[in-house]
Image (cartoon, rainbow, N blue to C red; front, side, top):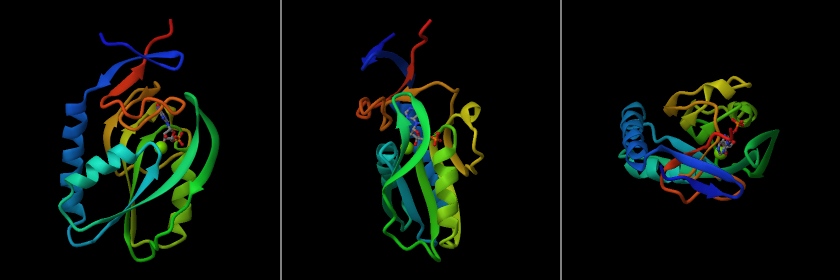
Length: 180
Ligand code: IMP
Ligand code: MG
């Protein structure tokens, strides 16, 4: 098994690149179907979602727009519980079909704070698409409309996700190795 070390921790391979791309293609096909003729606006949440968003967006065939915001709540391998808006939304969402793109839903804190702000701006519809979801970590209920992988409550990195800034460029997803 190919163990990698990032900062002080060891990680083991978890989701291979081919499987990630397969799931993203399936999601794109579903979105093509659900949003045909609706010119949806995708809002990608940086930093973690950049790779997922780019790969998904390339697979879409429908007319669609994408914009980016930056929210952060993580320090190291733990959620801080505080959500900071580092780059805000600069696009009008009133009367738009909006789809949020998020790398991972963990406690749900980030989206549980952000979604109501969007609802206030009265989009025509608002849905959430995520690459990864850790249901056992969920503390703040969030609607998830599209999800590529449901995973156990264990820290992961790679494919855009980081551990203290590193690991985002790894092509597949790794999981924190047992520390026992
Ligand atoms: P939440 O607000 O607790 O749902 O956390 C959401 C954000 O924390 C995600 O968008 C990620 O950027 C980050 N995050 C949560 N779990 C992990 C993980 O296992 N690895 C890397 N980042 C994570
Ligand atoms: Mg994120």
